[in-house]
Amino acid sequence: MKERVTLTIDKNLLEKVDQCIDGSKIKNRSHACELLLLKAFSSNRPRKAIILAGGSDPKFLQEIKGKKLIEWNIELLKRHGVKHIMICINENDKETKNILGDGKSFGLFIDYNEEKFPLGTSGSIKAVSDFVTETVIILNADELKNIDLDDMYVFHTDGHKICTIALTTVHDPNNFGVAMLNGNRIITFVEKPLKEKAPSKLVNAGLYIIEPEVLKYIPDGFSRIEQDVFPKLATEDKLWGYIFSGQWFSTKTTESFNQALVEWKGL
Figure (cartoon, rainbow, N blue to C red):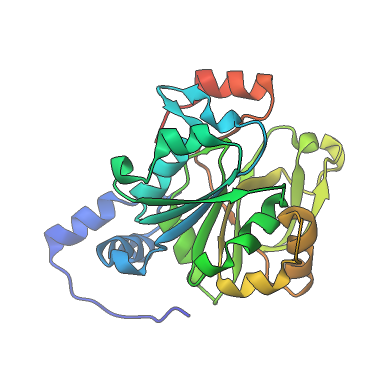
């Protein structure tokens, strides 16, 4: 819940606040002040994140612009105040642990949950439920994204949301789950629609902010968050979309990886 306040601020300081406003990423003075205060009181930002890296083929260890995909994701989290990361990996994936270690080289802590068998995207989250004791950022390891997580968190906390999905715009949505929205509330996802029949061009960017309450929507055993959890949340009007304009690349195909190799600008 937001409250309206009146502040008296030094003119020179106010000019610096105004310099942050770009009309898009930071829309106005109120928005700028909110983000600056959030960064100043960094203890209020999410401190925990889960990186989903449990596939048998660790494509997230491929390099783009001098860093492995998963390292770009760790850097994104660190820049926005995350201190503790849980990485869900296949139990046979020793390489990831050897490369990333305990996280000290990144200036944070990394733990691992080694999965003996595939659990699916939400099954992996349920398996580390003891870690989800507060607001947590969830993200896929094999995508590149430049998202202002502070701004996304401000959006998430407005109205006591329990699950917010980052949504990005794509030119041709027929290879993705496309969001159907009512305002910022997600009604449903339409899987791989024809371009001319897509309800929007907004697709799931593979990054979420969740509250512990979401755990009760995850079934035991193998489950996929896209098919088994999001529809339940949408039915109860508890699924929200945060639309961002920063770079995003899926690297699941050779074509998309090569595109990211050329176009990714870094963080």
